[in-house]
Length: 484
Image (cartoon, rainbow, N blue to C red; front, side, top):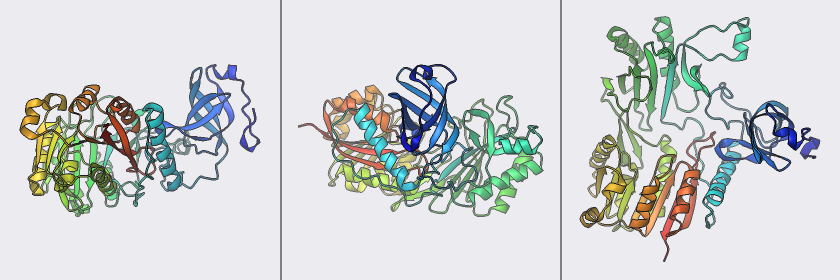
């Protein structure tokens, strides 16, 4: 079977189904879900990992090989697409982030928009209005406000580094990002373009001090070592919050390290430390302790100010977070009298953002600590028409609750990547609010939920928003209206 540029696949369909098959001279044609590239062979769809671009011609080693589809990783490039651009980061191809640096940003947006349409149509099987063009980011570098780095006593080494060491694999400490699919290997990051300075200075200062003073980096297999994680938040207000996570208390070394950091990077406004002796890296069940500053940072969306603690959730891209919330507010179409229910409200950011256009805002969130932050954020912004409740929506939203607080005119729901639980979808159908604005970070699970809501609601508007340039991730906002 002949393909573009005169290349052909030299393996028969029967052979493709065997194990350890390498497809040769495969022309890449498009992108599919989760950022995987797409090719076809004798009617079989082949999903490809490995930094490929439509227009590349590659060899693919299959890892999964089913009747109608296969999945594999590129092992050789025969030719490169003319769509490619040069990646700007020295860690591209090894670090697990920013996997689309080799694509022009305009093409990233095009593929993301297509991804949203494909999910809504193929999974949701929905009748859609014309989709508005995706809203791309003005900042395609240095756009994140939070990053988490990991300490490891086993640095990941490239083949070039191993060859330079005569084939030996030396044991070196690392502070950076986990290498994909290698949970105990961490890539030392020199310069990361996801956040503005002084983030690189902070990370590199801590690593250099720790190495020179022989402080122990964590061994995740043995679960021993002192330094575990480093979380940095840099707000558009200029405030910088650093949380150093350590395995156990070592007061003398902790004070010396943190004092050195503050002396080297005086722009830091808050330093905390968290002791984590557990087998996992989560800190939500731990208590960060303030070493310097007020113990939190402040961020702004429009003229609203939000308190962000070391365990608070906040949109990771402040610039595009504001764009996302504006779309949400516009889709809600508020006139000043409506009762708005904000589900999965977190620290109250969406509800507070729309509060001036609403009569009343009711925020509901399962995590009590987030609700405490939401109440404080409302008070900080003099928002007196918003009330927040901790608990499960399915349990809270009953007839007695509606009798006390009013039934919703508009529901805003912003669930995690897993989407809404089916019980909540059924509850929304029971509540039957005139409008639902569904904000999603995963159009696939959003499409699944919209298909369930289709019995009562029609899709009126669809607006993708790019929150994470150079990745395949995409946010999408959908306006649903109750059928007449």
